Length: 227
Ligand code: CA
Picture 1 (spheres, protein in one colour):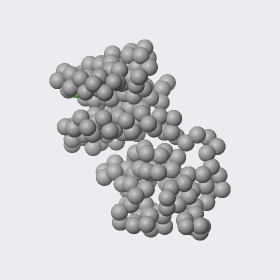
Picture 2: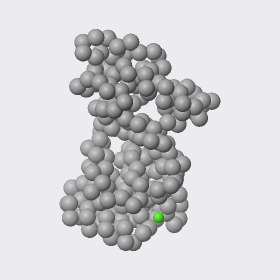
Picture 3: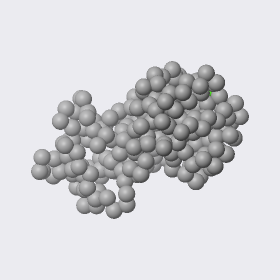
Picture 4: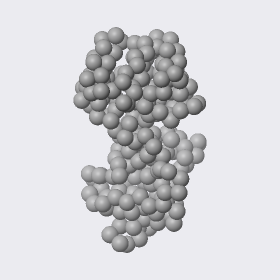
């Protein structure tokens, strides 16, 4: 049975989540605040955590940081609509995905299934050499990309960006993280760099660069590789 830790202080939402999750045979532990969440996470070892960022006793981002000290359990963040900074902070702290309130139960369940499915695939296993899509193949050891049997020439910067995304399949990687990794701390506000280089990568790899299938933009947040 898949165990879900639901960290949320809104009793109505908790009730709806518990009913819906139990109906689909998830085991559910509700936690109304951050301290209870951390205690239950250690005691119950959930397979996935659904975490409201606005908790009565502590910031949800600090809950993520505390969890990340010892576990890679997938964390799906529930966030208020306008709080874009908050979502980015949560993702940078190690959340795996977010969903904006109000959300439909179907969407939450789909995100939850995806988060659980990615467990173990969140980071590629060390030694993984080849990542293959229907459009292109990436050799992470030889640092080569081929498309329709031909080598695709990437600049070192393009390669670095692509490699980070490919090594986190299905995961949203924040703009801040990409900028920090590829250009360094002093360039972490240059989101225009990312737009330019992502456009170049799409031109080289996507069949239809204006409707990307593999290198997906999450508006205001970052990018995601969908294999
Ligand atoms: Ca709340």
